[in-house]
Length: 103
Image (cartoon, rainbow, N blue to C red; front, top):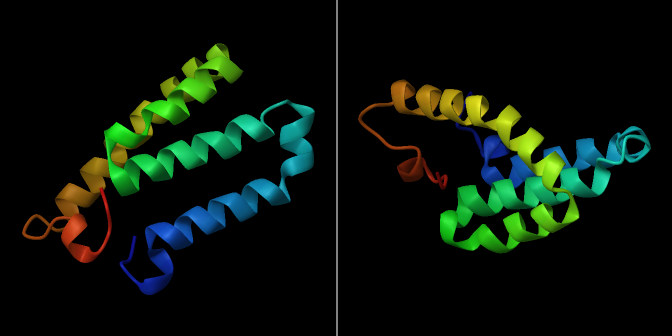
């Protein structure tokens, strides 16, 4: 991963939401579209603001579909560990937050 202007958290959010909208028909066929959009909102709220502001998103996802929330969480946990490992080993002298990103 590079740390260019097009790799900011805001750009990443926009790219993921655009990709989700592109595949909306497929996600709606499997009944995952609304859940996926809320999941991304929760993910970026966590990365931008920390864990305190994630609870309302988690509650909405839980009441929408507890089974999907458990599945998605189980799929996402290994990715989170890899994401952290990559960024912490990439620049040990400078944190990801100091580069202008929340994390």
